[in-house]
Amino acid sequence: MSQVQQLLTEHLDIWTAAETEKKSGRGRVSGSAGKVYGIQKLRELILELAVRGKLVPQDPNDEPASELLKRIQAEKSKLIADGKLKKEKKIAQIADDEKHFELPKGWEWVRNCELFQLRKGRIPKTLNEDGLGLPYLDIDALDRNIMRRYSEELTCPKSTDKDILVVCDGSRSGLVLDGKNGIIGSTLSIIDTPIYIQNYIKLIFKQGFEIFNTSMKGAAIPHLDTQKLLQNPTALPPLPEQQRIVAKVDELMALCDQLEQQHSNAVEAHEKLVEHLLGTLTQAKNAQEFNSKWQRIYAHFDTLFTTEASIDALKQTLLQLAVMGKLVPQDPDDEPASELLKRIQVEKAKLIADGKLKREKPLAPIAKDEQPYQLPEGWSWLRLNELLTKIGAGSTPLGGKQVYVKEGVPFLRSQNVWDEGLKLDDVAFIKLDTHQKMSGTHVYSGDLLFNITGASIGRCAIVPESFVTGNVSQHVTIIRPASNQILRFMHLVLISKHVQQTVMDVQVGVSREGLSIGKLGQFVVPVPPLAEQHRIVAKVDELMSLCDKLKTCIQQASQQQQKLADALVAQVLA
Image 1 (cartoon, helix red, strand yellow):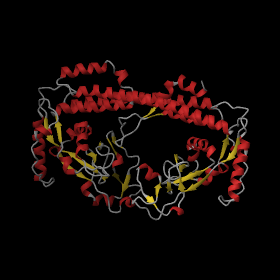
Image 2 (tube, helix red, strand yellow; image 1 turned 90 degrees about the horizontal axis):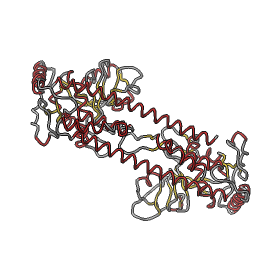
Image 3 (tube, helix red, strand yellow; image 1 turned 135 degrees about the vertical axis):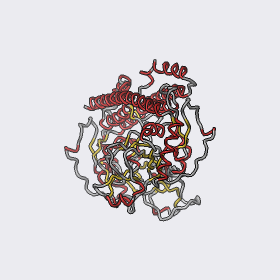
Image 4 (cartoon, helix red, strand yellow; image 1 turned 180 degrees about the horizontal axis):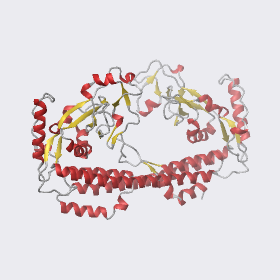
C-alpha cells in the first residue's frame, strides 16, 4: 500500500468531516452536498507528491530525464530547421532560489518553454450556423454546447482530438481540456508538446492552479500570464517514471472520487431523512400529534442535526410551525385577530381622512383555494396590503453609481438586505439633497425591506430602531406595517416557507427573477391574535438562538477538521 493510500484509509474521519457547504443566492446553505474540504486537500497532496517524485518509487534502470530532454531539444531543432517552429531566445539558467525542493535521482529542472509552447486562439471575424466549416471552440461555446462554425480555416489555430487545450481567460484560467476538432477561440490555447509527455504535462497543469494564480494578471477578468508561465521551472522525471506517476495519480483520484461519492450519498440520505421528519411536524393535525412527532425527533437530535444544512432546515421548519399556529399553545382568552384588523382599519381611515394615505382600492375576498392550511381559532387570513400603510419599491437616483458619495445618507441595495438584518459593511451613500428629492422612498426604523429582483429575491430585513433614515434602490420594496406591534411577526411570515414559496410561484422574468409590488400586496398571510404574536416571536427568538449556538459549534468543529487536514498534508510534504 502506498503512503497516500495509507493516509486515505487511516484518516477517513479527517478527509470527509470538513465539508465546505454550498451557499444559495439567498445566502443560505443549499440542499445539495457541498465539496469536501479534506478530499480537496487530499487531491492537492496527491498532485504535489507526484511532481516532487514522492508518489512512486524511482527505478535506477530508468533512462534519466537529461536524455529525454536531449531528444525533445533535437526534435525542436529539426522543426526550426524545417521552418515549422521559430527559433527560441536564449533560455536563462535556473537559479538555486527557483528550485523549490530537492530532486530525486534522474530528474532534471527545466523551464516550461523547453517542454511546451502555447498557441493562443483568436476571435474569428465571421461565424455561421449553417453547418459549413470547422466548429468554433471557446470556453463559453463548450460550456453552453453552442455549435457555430468558421469557414476560413487557415487564419485561426486548429485543434484536433489529440491536442490538449488550456483556458487562458476567465476564472478557470489554467484549466486543461481534452482537444477537439475545430478552430479555437481567444479564451483557449493549444499546448504544443511531444505526444509522449502529454499526459505528464496535463498533470503539471492540474497541479499548478496555485502556481497559475501567481501567473494571473487583470483585475476584472483574470488572464493567464503565458510568458511568465513559460519561464516557470518544472521538475522533469524520466519518461518511464512519468508513466508510472500518471497511472498512480489516476488510481488515487479514482479512490478520491469513490470516497467523495460515498460521502455525497450519505449526506443526501441524511438530508432526505431530516426533510422527511421535519415535514411530519408541519403535517400534524393537532397538538397531541405534534408533540408525539417532536419527541421522536428530539430523541435523535444529536444525530439528525449535525450539519449547517440540517440546522437551516430546522430553522425553516420552526418558522413554518410559527406561522401555522403550532409553535405555542393558543389561549381562548386572547382577543381574536379580527379585532386587531378592525383597529388597523380605523387607524388607516384616519390617515386617509388627514390626507396622509391614499384611499385603497377594494381588495378581493380570499377564496378557499388561496388558504394553504387551516388556521387555529382566533386567527385570520388577510391580504398583506390590509396590514400596511405603505408598500412600494425604491428608485435609483439619476446617474446611478456615479452619484454615490463617500459619506451621506445610506442608500440601501439588495446586497444590504438579509433575513438576519441589514448588513451595512458595503453600503452606498447619496447626498442629502438627492435623498430629499427621492422623498417617496425614504426608509425609517420599523420598516421591512423586501428584495423583489435577482438571486436574493425574497430576502427580508427589519430596519432597526437605531437607523435614522435612508433611501432604497428599485430592487427593494419598502413594507411599512400599520402598527409597530405586528412588525416582528410580519417579518417571520415574510421569511417563512409559506411566503417564500409564493414568491417563487408568482415571480416573472426570464433571465432575472422579478416580483411586482401589486402581486406582493395581494399575498395571503396568516394573522394570529396580537397576544399570541408576541408569544410566538419570543419562542422563535429562543429557539433560533439555540439553533445558532448549535450551528456555531458545527462550524468550529468543521474548522478544526480543516486544520487537521492542513496539518496532515503539511506533515507529509515536510
